Every structure is written in structure tokens, then in C-alpha cells.
Length: 320
Image (tube, rainbow, N blue to C red):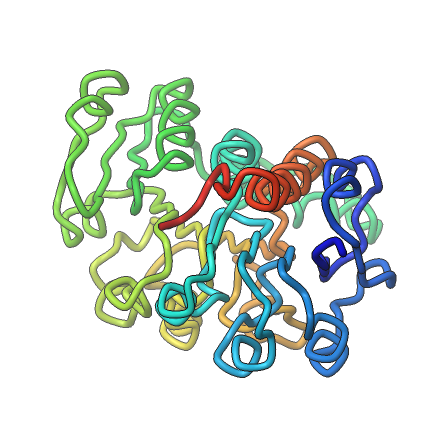
């Protein structure tokens, strides 16, 4: 009997083709709707492998009900939705999808930075609402990006890719990371500085660090108070790195100029979210890697991780 693989979202058949020879596949079949928790617990109970998204919590309850579980393939770079410590204790392999989304996410991050700086959503709405009736010198004037200082918090693969794009705009690149990266400093002319230095010197502060106990809530009231009043804050990593109440206060009290947000502490958010309502915020629905090509690569890699594990006993991109 073939092992059971449960897939928590509807994926294209070509992305999971590799699994058909080695497993029986069950897949949630409602497009754009997350699998309900009770359905996941029931349908995946006997599964040997799970292919999950960030929206699914792979926690103690799930581990305790899935006695056959051997591998969880998360279709994302991050895996803070998974209790990795418990997985390790139960000898369950966890995989992610690194590398394949680096450039796509960096593109979106820099696009978000530029859209926020130059007020692009506001300008597009201006026309759609038939407000463009005349021209004046400072109408919808934003701030320049070129020759400014970008501070990157989290110089991983995506951070490096954003730094490359920033160099194309003749920006000064600063970064803060858990460890220095001399090769990045040499290649990109980036300068390592302390977290406080990053806050104080950056015209654009881009958050790209993973969510850990150390980074959770690191962008708090104290952090925003240290930033330039002309600074723009961009978050394309995880919403929980930011104290959203503190960010709202900083934006409404003129402590910083604006913010571009692709992620929020609790997702999805509604149009009533306080940050979404602000004119100096550009808000996106967590679309960092959302190009068709990249999402196909992510889905295929997640499926191939399961295939390799079931066929050869070794995954392609395990996180431990």
C-alpha cells in the first residue's frame, strides 16, 4: 500500500506530478480557501507526509493525531508555523523552499519601497476618483530613492538580493545581521552596523529577518523613536517582528514618514485595520513571492522534497 500524502491547498497537477508514482494523494480542493482545521485533522490523520502552507499550524495537537507522519514540506522559506522542536523529538523531517523565491521576493520588496516613497497607490487612486483636475508643483510629491541610505535588517539571501537592487539606484547600503558577512560587504559595498545605528542612519529601513524569539517585536516604540522623521519603514518578512500599535503611533505622530507592509501580525487583515486606513501606508496581502513562475517552483520543490524522502529516505531541502 502506498503512503498517504495530504496537501492542504489546491495545487496544479503538474507541480505534484512526481508524487503520483510513490504515494496516494489527498488534496484540499477549494481554491483560495484554507483547509478548515477539523478537516485537516480528520483527512490527514493517516498521512505519512504533509504539504503545508504558512497558514496551517503544525502543532502538538496535529503531531499527536498523526501517528504515521514522517515529513512536513512547507511551501515557504519560513517555517514558524511548525513546532520544529516537537518535530525533531518525533523524528519528523521538516523542509522548506529556499532560493527559488529569492529574486521574486526581492523584486516585490523593492517595488514596495518605491511605491511607498513615490506615493504610487495614492496617485493611481487620484485618477480613478477623478481628482486630477489641475497640476501644481508639489501635487503628490513623494521622496527620492536614488542616492539615499537603505538599512537592511536581516542580510540573508533576500536581503542580499535587495542590496543588489539598491546599488543600482546608487544607494548607500547598511545592514544588521546576526553575524557579519565580509563577502557581502566586499561584493556589494555594504556596511555592517549595530541595530541602533541602522535605525538612526537609514532613510529606508527594510525588515527581512526571520521571526525568532530575539526578533519578535523588535520594531517597537523605542525603535521607531530612533528613526529619522523622514524615514520609511518596509516590512516584507513577518508581521510579528513589529509592534503594530507602536508603528501606528509613529506614523500618526510624524515620528517616521511612511511604511510599506506586505505582512501583518495576524493575517489576513481587513480594510478596517488601523494601519491600512493610513494615507502614508502602502499595504499588500503578503504577496512577496506571488509570481506564477515562482509559486510553481515552490510547489514543485515542496512536492519533490516529499518524493525524495519517500523514495530515497532523504529530503532535498531539510531545515535541520
